[in-house]
Image (cartoon, rainbow, N blue to C red; front, side, top):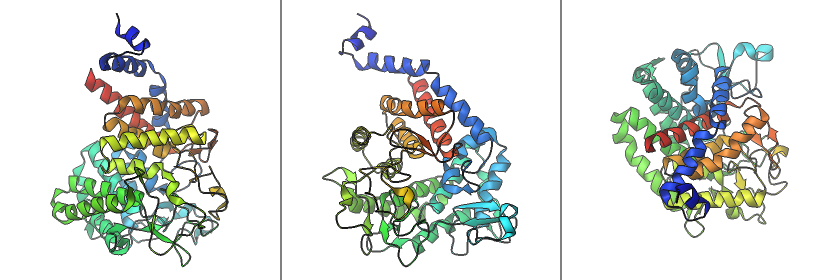
Length: 426
């Protein structure tokens, strides 16, 4: 009796089941099609996508490994160096930069970050976020790992080196975004990993109306950055390892809801910006959970439970993939920004940019079959829409930038991880 017949009859052993879905992967042409499309889209530039003029560090971090395959390494280093050259005196890192020549009229009240070290560029910072510094450190790590160019860490930036600038970025977070009571980093209240706070029509800058909060995404990104920094600069471990251990313990102590097996959305340092009728802890944050898994905060059993919850949320919401930002959504009017309506933008929009990172973690933690199953609808819509879109609506319609390089980067990396996993098993 063949293994395939056993699988069809519903009584497979593990070997025959693995053989069937591994054969499916081998025969699935969509993986190579999407990889080739990703290579082409990243080859065409470094800005986040056709809806953005900036090179954003939180985006660049997610396609820099792919960029090393299609761009001269010096070009990639030059892009990274601009972020360090624009780094401010307190160590904070800009979100993104543009050439001054591209600014209409030559002046802007948005691109206000300048530095003599980068005379041709101007940057900006969405201050509601706490992930610019950690994104840059992760991006440098990925560049070094992809190229073995450890010498880049000693590249000069003014009177400092890249490595010293990385340490200064981490220092900024501990000095200016660290809450002593909880032993965790804080930011503004946003939806999961988003950069839109509820108090304003746009919502990207901290001010007197902001509600400061602690969430899992910011702290998980910090943990990943610390791990990355200590790996490529091991002499820094004495300084940062105790902090890493403390952040990890406190994240699970204060943000993990043991009873409901999920992360709570926020710890508020004063009060919530949301109406008391909103029970925020019913909301499941998909993106922050994926990044927490990348930060090695969850056990294999907790990862499987998290995936099951994500799949259930996709089914309940009618969305297409586990890239669903969160579920259930914040109700109409919870955010003044009109784009943050239920299932809009970061309030229940479906983002492969984070769903693809969950796929990567599933592969890394031994859930290859589940990774492939959950990735397939992501691949299908890239092919059907002939492009990488920023996000997707509840009914799977593409929205935003049509050349979103972050989506291309995370899918390429996810496919590569899956293919390498299968090769290792043969």
